[in-house]
Length: 254
Image 1 (spheres, rainbow, N blue to C red):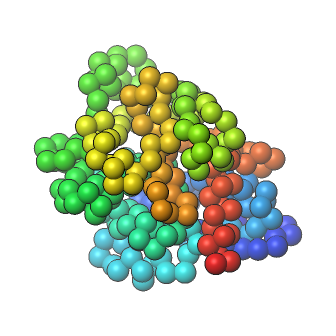
Image 2 (image 1 turned 120 degrees about the vertical axis):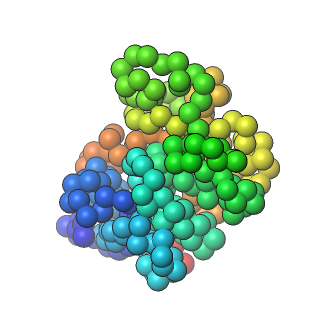
């Protein structure tokens, strides 16, 4: 539970992760939510949900009543299907959703399975021979030999599409954000996703790499390939965290 000194409102945010039992696993996420809450004069109550628990549960049993859902980064297959169920619940019930790194990749998988109808869609990180590798390691990643091997690391530029949620939150056309991942959105699925309502609101300067996705006809659904939590400060909350808490407030008051 995170408290502000003089909150005027409160919202409940579900953080759905695979390391929930480890106290400091998502410390930067919780702190960033606090920073946003302070800015919004809002008490942010965090409901920590182990993603593996969702796999055998009706998502509504654990997520009913929350005002926002956040899926953070991570590695490995454990708990992935639970994260996908949480994202589906957020998408179908119009609950503000914020996906970070793996939370962006699982949002793409969920969309491909349940909107595009590609029932076996997955990441090649989890299923190497999946029929629909909507998340994969791109050829240019395989050739990287500097620090981190195939990982994309450090601050990288992202160009934002005018009029999107991300662009309005940042109030900028280009930003620098920190990365730590190997797998990317597969460009072979870009047209199909776009036609079905996915918005590619942030791209690398070359236009080849997808950095931010949003959904049409959803009040606030933003998923990013990078880690915005590393740039948030008490006196200057990260604009996406602030936008997410504002959207949760709007949901709470709806």
